Length: 261
Image (spheres, helix red, strand yellow):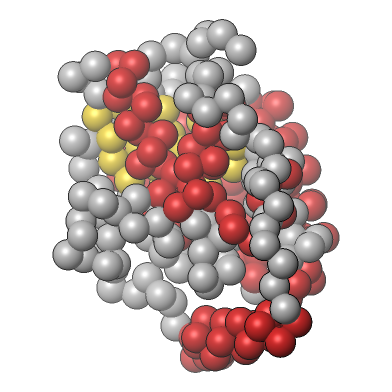
């Protein structure tokens, strides 16, 4: 693959926890365990290498936010920065809602894409993952599949780039996901950054980023059950509790990179 991409100099990322970077610790912020790096930061680092000193980056994504926030206040703030590249990745939390309207979700994303493209900026979208082998989250597979198809159609109509998480075979490996089994691990975010670079027409540094991971050591059934139980107590239970109370993990949180810098 040759590097055929333009040189972007003003990149703004909008979205939810996926783009904020959970649960990839930021080595630049060792005293703040709630500060994360993530695929978008990693992508920005590579874009900065290509653009030089005049590159600027903002990340307005906040964990727990629904699509209305992503294509509402976040989009408005992003457009005010006159970016030449915007990653629009939202709707993941909406897909978890029992009565989600997938058609409405796609229409709102497409309207946001049109607004960005009308400014002349490029757009990077990202599909959800294939949860067919994801245990408890298998129930989301049909929704994720329809949403993925909708995103590819939007991208085709408006000339967007697509980070294809659905088609990334390595994402079927649990080592690509953090302890909460919802957000990518540091390894996962690294591979996602490579997938984003590939989508943008930039050769990833790791030529094997799409390869499956080496076989993992076998885990005894008793140990696996113990790990499932610990996960349910530490992550699944609190997550369900927040949903029942109508709370969000991002309540009162601000973006980690609110201005171009």
